[in-house]
Length: 74
Image 1 (cartoon, helix red, strand yellow):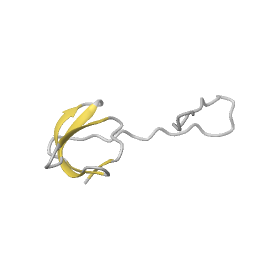
Image 2 (cartoon, rainbow, N blue to C red; image 1 turned 60 degrees about the vertical axis):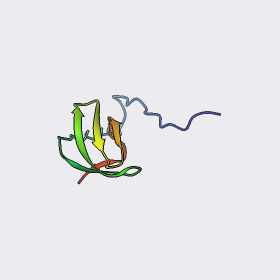
Image 3 (cartoon, rainbow, N blue to C red; image 1 turned 45 degrees about the horizontal axis):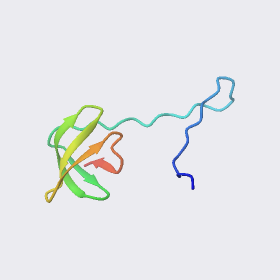
Image 4 (spheres, rainbow, N blue to C red; image 1 turned 135 degrees about the vertical axis):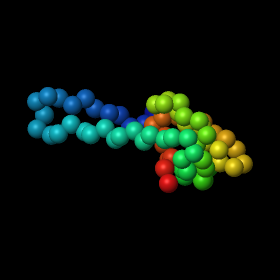
Protein backbone atom coordinates (compact mmCIF):
# COMPACT_ATOMS: atom_id res chain seq x y z
CA UNK A 1 0.00 0.00 0.00
CA UNK A 2 1.36 3.44 -0.89
CA UNK A 3 1.71 6.23 1.64
CA UNK A 4 -0.70 9.13 1.35
CA UNK A 5 1.68 12.06 1.39
CA UNK A 6 1.30 15.14 -0.77
CA UNK A 7 3.44 15.30 -3.87
CA UNK A 8 4.69 18.70 -4.98
CA UNK A 9 4.95 19.06 -8.71
CA UNK A 10 7.57 20.98 -10.58
CA UNK A 11 6.41 24.25 -12.16
CA UNK A 12 7.29 24.55 -15.83
CA UNK A 13 8.43 27.99 -17.04
CA UNK A 14 6.12 27.72 -20.06
CA UNK A 15 3.04 27.02 -17.95
CA UNK A 16 0.18 29.55 -18.19
CA UNK A 17 -0.52 29.05 -14.49
CA UNK A 18 1.24 30.92 -11.71
CA UNK A 19 3.71 28.95 -9.58
CA UNK A 20 2.47 27.89 -6.14
CA UNK A 21 3.32 30.31 -3.36
CA UNK A 22 5.29 28.83 -0.48
CA UNK A 23 3.69 29.40 2.90
CA UNK A 24 5.77 31.67 5.15
CA UNK A 25 7.50 29.91 8.04
CA UNK A 26 6.26 31.10 11.42
CA UNK A 27 8.93 32.63 13.68
CA UNK A 28 8.76 32.02 17.41
CA UNK A 29 10.59 33.76 20.26
CA UNK A 30 11.19 32.82 23.88
CA UNK A 31 8.12 33.11 26.12
CA UNK A 32 5.68 33.17 23.17
CA UNK A 33 2.33 31.66 24.10
CA UNK A 34 1.30 28.98 21.62
CA UNK A 35 -1.46 26.46 21.00
CA UNK A 36 -1.00 22.98 19.54
CA UNK A 37 -3.81 20.75 18.25
CA UNK A 38 -2.61 17.71 20.21
CA UNK A 39 -0.86 19.15 23.31
CA UNK A 40 -2.93 22.28 24.01
CA UNK A 41 -1.65 25.60 25.37
CA UNK A 42 2.03 26.11 26.05
CA UNK A 43 4.97 28.50 26.30
CA UNK A 44 8.07 28.46 24.08
CA UNK A 45 11.13 27.72 26.24
CA UNK A 46 13.83 27.32 23.55
CA UNK A 47 14.19 28.14 19.86
CA UNK A 48 16.42 26.30 17.38
CA UNK A 49 16.11 28.86 14.57
CA UNK A 50 14.55 27.28 11.49
CA UNK A 51 14.89 23.76 12.95
CA UNK A 52 12.55 23.32 15.93
CA UNK A 53 11.05 24.91 19.03
CA UNK A 54 10.86 23.48 22.53
CA UNK A 55 7.47 24.10 24.14
CA UNK A 56 6.42 23.59 27.77
CA UNK A 57 2.80 22.42 27.85
CA UNK A 58 2.64 22.23 31.64
CA UNK A 59 2.48 18.47 32.06
CA UNK A 60 5.12 17.78 29.39
CA UNK A 61 7.78 19.45 27.26
CA UNK A 62 7.78 18.74 23.53
CA UNK A 63 10.16 19.52 20.66
CA UNK A 64 8.13 20.62 17.64
CA UNK A 65 10.17 20.46 14.39
CA UNK A 66 9.81 22.98 11.56
CA UNK A 67 7.52 23.72 9.68
CA UNK A 68 5.69 23.72 13.05
CA UNK A 69 2.63 21.73 12.01
CA UNK A 70 -0.45 22.38 14.16
CA UNK A 71 1.40 25.05 16.21
CA UNK A 72 -0.16 28.53 16.34
CA UNK A 73 1.18 31.64 18.05
CA UNK A 74 -1.40 33.32 20.29
